[in-house]
Image (cartoon, rainbow, N blue to C red):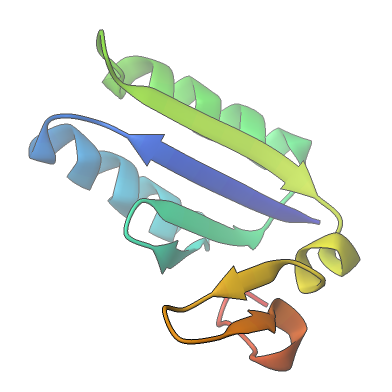
Length: 93
């Protein structure tokens, strides 16, 4: 399973705390405010509990757990071309 976390947190200090926590859990940056890595629904709950302490009005954190094969089929547009995730291995796998 892959845990994907997307966030929009207004204050840099709180963003940094969440980023460091996600890295400690083994997630890697996929995009500026998107992290992904191996995990389960238990991992997602841990992240949600931590996010609850950091999120203020106007902030948001989106956490989803998907099967690895679903993640591998994700489409990515990098500004010049579309590709499927499994064509380019990210460090999260």
